[in-house]
Amino acid sequence: MQRITRLSMLGLAALAGMSACKPESVIVTPAIPTAGVRFINALPDSTGSFGLDFRFLDIVENSTAFRVQFRNSPTTTSGVTAATSAQFRAAQAGSRRFAVFLDDTLQAIASTKLKDSTLTLEAGKNYTVILWGAARAGQMKLSVINETVAEPPAGKVAVRVINATQTAIDVRSFVTGAAVPAGATWSNVAGLSASSFVTADTGSISYNVQPAGGGTPLFADMIALLGARASSSAGTGGKLDIEPLPGTRVAGSAVTLIVFPRSTAGARTPQTAAFAVPAGAFVWDKRPPRGF
Image (cartoon, rainbow, N blue to C red; front, side, top):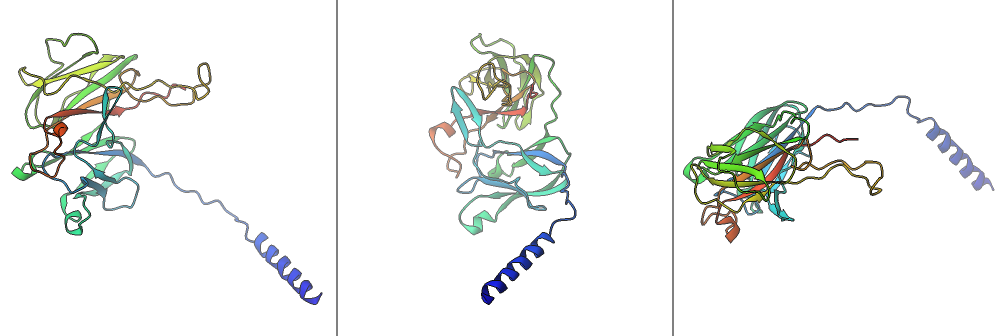
């Protein structure tokens, strides 16, 4: 009985100590201003075994883009090709130092930096960091595009093209199923450059890409990201609770076709038939309003 009594007293003392440890104040975690950053690998002739790594070096955060393959892993679903690894990731605003490394299992290769630079991020804005050109010829270039897209007019979408090849192109955007227009939407888009945005009616939009001045298309006409309107998890007639997806069928969206060059023959970039010719892939630049 004496042993049980002592144990009971110890238990009561422990409970008393626990009750005395109640927090007396609330610690508030400050909201960190962030921007969105995506990395595009348009370098056709230089890569590690698994592509490239883009990472910030000054702050540890979940903004790194690992194993980004040439063309950002294009995937075709229902006739629409998207660059699946080209996603905006939150990064702390301010002046930031970053580097682009070869991605490989060999340390000597994985520690190789292709670029080491800084950029200034403004809170609430999106940025595209794109590595392109011909590294073997000493013409590799890193560009940063401020993706501030003006709000499209009511019922409209914004569309654009990024030319990641080194030769100029003409690009026509048109209603899917209609005849390819005679005049280009964007004429003589220089190599390694982005066109301006133009507005278009909502609906399915296709792109036709030709050499500057006209000629045989670089590849078959491509259908842009379609997107999806806000919907309900409860089905038809339910309260809208699923956010819309950006695409040309959803007003307020902005969409870009990236025209990629072919892989350089003999390089460590993919050498399959699909990479032996130029190709395109779509990304979104602006999400539509939630609508609920």
